[in-house]
Length: 546
Image 1 (cartoon, rainbow, N blue to C red):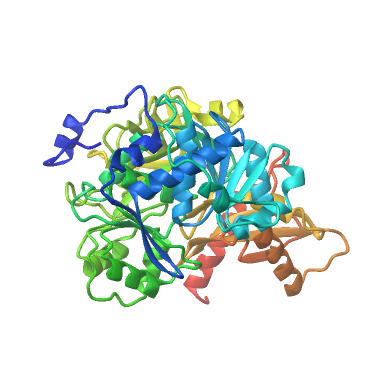
Image 2: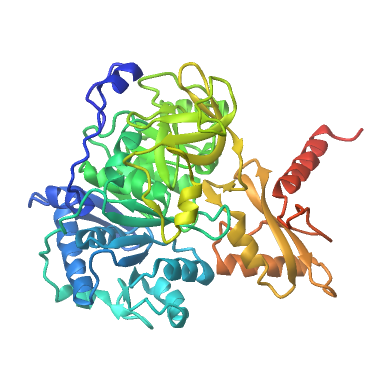
């Protein structure tokens, strides 16, 4: 945690020190120590049937019951537990139950299609999944290909292929002691976007929560403060929703507003924040741009807004000041090592285009090919020095990929950037092909793999095409099999094929049928050539005729 009442950034750095105990368990830290019988509010759930408040006492009893149900089925230390649920209290309960057992939680996005789910569950070897009726229907069709998956438990009651979890919980004991876990014991697998090949499971230790705290407290203007209430539209299956909002808030005893938005609606989001007195918001840049087009209501009580994943421009920062009376703080990180750079307007000036300064406790630098620190202004790789409490343990069952992630003692993010004389870091570009769309980081490999499964497709390449609202959209270049003619109907069919198998945010919003793809001499697709071609077309269109 950050030291109290820092006067400026230099004071913050000078007084900060990590306090990582040898023994640590997320469930004990986020639930048990607050479950003292006082009824302190942990979650405010906005559901179709109304608003329900969950206390820490409620979370404790429910997570103990679930831990006992899982343990009775043989789930214990090191076993993987999939959590396929939206923003609802049962998702928090499932996480706490897994940590309580010393098991490993595997959060799964509810909009994943069958192929995306099957890959992650198969790769992790998940022994159980906690889900709802909708998720159970998806999983029922996959069970034959997932031999390790012994139990599917539905929070909505009995469903095809799923057990009636409420009935099991009613018979279980509300008492369960947390496992005596080391801070370095594994706790969570969060899958990356698959920027190079299939998605990789980033394995994090129990300490990852402690590692996140300074990076949450700084962009939220020295969070927590009396009266704070946190909300994000980001799903808790992603690191941004889970470890940037839910678990840090519970750690600090701060309530979280839980609400699933089937589709982001700017007017509804504004109304939600005003009606419930939301004080702290994590909002992706795309959502902020959508909010900018809506009319803010009276009565907003927001005191901090943080955003990550995309660079905020000066216009968006000015809009934030006019709308909320505050400066939106940008932060930076990735699944393997999150929240390591941040702005904090209350302590030091925000420089438009910069993602901020290193968060206390993290050694972030721009390095060269040999791992050397580069001087201010020089372009190089953004990297974080190990050891670091927020850094992953490694990729699940993939030591070769883990080794490639490091250059000497530096974790290399894959992003290019510069640093100035005052330590402000600026993101310049990517040295991989990750697509940033509507706040999601999307890898082309998984999309191309799905595209290539379509019977009409011979080869494909997916890139990010610049977009004014989403930052980028997914565009696919498709080479058809011999004898198949391109058409609008076929493009729509291929789009639907990907959307139903992966996720709605991953399907290509544009498809171009081409005769061939640019390839290296070893047969690798040169996606950069495709991206450059798209940008050239956009520039020509802006220039106009002549």
